Image (cartoon, rainbow, N blue to C red; front, side, top):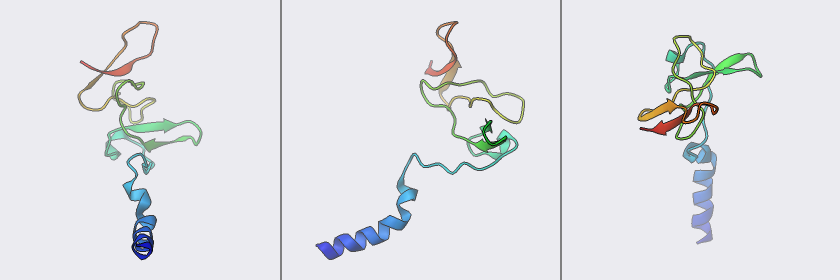
Length: 95
């Protein structure tokens, strides 16, 4: 039993990062068309931009701009970027 556990850990441990759904590889970009998610997000800390996932339900969002880089990513497919209150920022909602 212990041998099977050690073998399982030896196989899974080097690849553990591949199984984590929230681990993303943020690649540098200069235009949103270079990203699989179609969102090239501005990185103010490093004065560059990186590919980021689109906004999910209830996350802050902005529409896709005609420019190359986004300040905030647009919503995932099926969600709409709307503001339910004029004072609050836009968020992704199902419509």
